[in-house]
Structure formats: structure tokens, C-alpha cells
Image: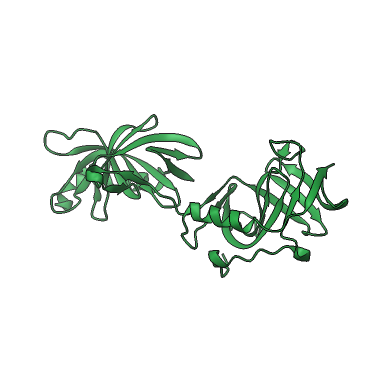
Amino acid sequence: MKTKAFSLFSVIVILLSSISLFSCSNDDEDGIWTGGTNLVGIWAVLDSYNDTEVPSTHELYIIKADGSIALLYNWDFLYDDGYLVDKYFGYPQEEIEKEMEEWAAYDTYTCTFSNNTFYWQGTAMAKITVIDKETVKMESVFLGNETLHKVKEVIGKRSFDYDGSNGQTASLLGKWIGVDMERNKNGTYNVHYLFELDDRGRLSIRPLEGVYHKSNYGNGYIESPLSQDELDRLLRSNLTVFKFCQKKNNKLFCNNEQLATIEATSDDEFVMVSTRWGKLRLLPNGEDVGIISSQNKNDWN
């Protein structure tokens, strides 16, 4: 995908005819509705949309409940199932949202909205045609003819920090082994899942039944009763991915579904309580953790 040069803090807000924000009157406090679609929110113009390339956008429209319209240009995001994902610059989500709000607060023009059309000073400014609930077509002499896609949320760099022991902060980012809460008598742990979470809120889970032999001099290894071929096949194929996860208080949400309650018990261990995965202790899965078949255990030692 072609990456455009972009600086978040030098965003150029471009609106044809030097108009950058329209403020339109509206009697409906819930929004501006047409064809069963609420126009209030963020809308993206996609640069490409096909099966082989993730679509991207650098042109956004913001419509507020009072009818105001702002055009933000040169905001480069990936568009993923209604979400705008910043994968290039790593800005925190709160910072992106603040910048968008500040750049949208420009000159205003009082308008009205009726018959699927925005009017400014009695002149039809933009006609809206609903394609589906998340997509509309805009025909405008001022703004151009564009297909707009509704944005559910802006995804920047997210924080997954939890309050740990001794007033320290523990981060859930990285790879984790989900094991029983209690150790076995021989000091091993029964393994059930492998987790990985990145700072864009992408959570990957693989089920894996085995035994974790934790080493005092490294991260040890996970011993699986499966054959090596079965184990390799499982690790390649049996993967579930949850996108757009975020932390709210001590809870983990993905696509607005609460998946787990998480507590940091130390700087590098967590307790997870989940209706999906049960109550687990999360241990760090570093680069030194090997996953082997019990049939090949002697090869590891």
C-alpha cells in the first residue's frame, strides 16, 4: 500500500471555496436522520476498496448533531470494518481525537437540512443519498461528489496498563501463557491458552493444552501431549483474533463486548476472569519459551 507523507500536528484542513465548517440548524437532538441512517458522526472517503488491499483514507467528514460539517484532509488511516486504524505514526487515541476535534472547530455557516439535502443561505449545498446504513453518497458543488463510509471509532495507540504491586504499573501488551491459578506439586503449570495483545488492540488467542515447565534461568518450555506434526498444525491454524480491544477500568473489551476482568498480581503476572476462557493466571511468554511434543522431550533436554 502506498504510504502518504503525513504529520498529525500540521494537518491541513481543506474545504473548497475556502469553507471549512458549516453549522446547520437541526430540530432533532438525536441527530440528522435520512433513510433510516443517522448522519451524525465521522465519515471516510476510501482511497481503495477491494479484496486484495486494505482500504485507506486521507479525507474525513465530520457531521455533528447541530448539522455542522467539517472536512479534514491529509489524515492517513487504514479503514477496517468501519474503524479508522492509525498504523503509521503511533499516536495515542486520545491525542488523535483531540486533534480532530480542534481542527473541526473552524468557520461556521448556518444551514438547514430537509429533503435529504443540506441548505446554506437558501442554496442546496449537499444532497445525501443513503446506500446502506453505513454508506451514503454525497453530491455537492461545494464539497464534491463522494461516497462516504461511516466510521465507528478511531483506533490509535492504546494503553493496557494495570495497577500492579507496590504501586507499580504492569502492561498487558505482549505474549502470555494462560495457565491454572495454582501450580502443580512438581512446580509445573497446566496450560490452556496462548494470548498476544498489541497496542492497536488486536488480541490473538490459541488454545493449547499442555504443561509449562518454568525455568529459573529462562522461560522454560511448554510440553504438549500432541505429536510434533499435530502441534505444528494446531499452532498454524487454530487462531482466533479479536480486533479493536480496549481497557476500561480493569476490564477488557473487544468490539464493545466485555471479554474479561483482569488484575495485575505482580509486575509480570495477571489474573484473568472470563466467561470465554475461565479463571486463569497469565504468565509472560517470552522469546525463549519453546513448545514441544512430549514425544520429543528428550530432544529439548
